[in-house]
Image 1 (cartoon, rainbow, N blue to C red):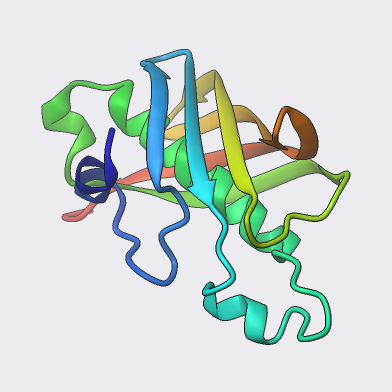
Image 2 (cartoon, rainbow, N blue to C red):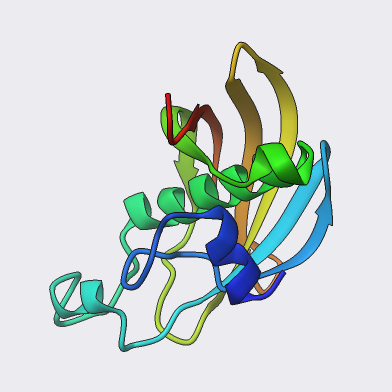
Amino acid sequence: MDIHEIQEFLPHRYPFLMVDRVVECEPGKRLLAIKNVTYNEPFFQGHFPHQAIMPGVLIMEALAQATGLLASKSVSDELGRGVTYYLVGLDKARFKRPVVPGDQLQLEVIYLKDKRNIWSFSCRAEVDGEFVASANIMCAASRADD
């Protein structure tokens, strides 16, 4: 999926769209996406001026957006479009190393289960094959007309 297809499924836009490309997608199973981290990101002005580090909460947001993409692609096209997936739970979040400008964040989300419009995923972020962060993330599906 390129950025244009991603924007068909996610409501986020600059500066809050945190997924640049989907490299692999196995609907109902797994998704691998990337976020290119550049020095021009608006959050680097204040986090931190003396040493630019991507905020951990934004790494989690990037993973959460990837879960929404996998959930959207795991249902038929008619159902996937027009549905917004809201972050409803984040458990077992762990951070290992900072993400800095120039890094390419690899976002892997693995489907665990869904029940009553609540989807659960195991998520992991890496840079150059090195563990950066992980969490179990839950999102809830909601149609625009709900």
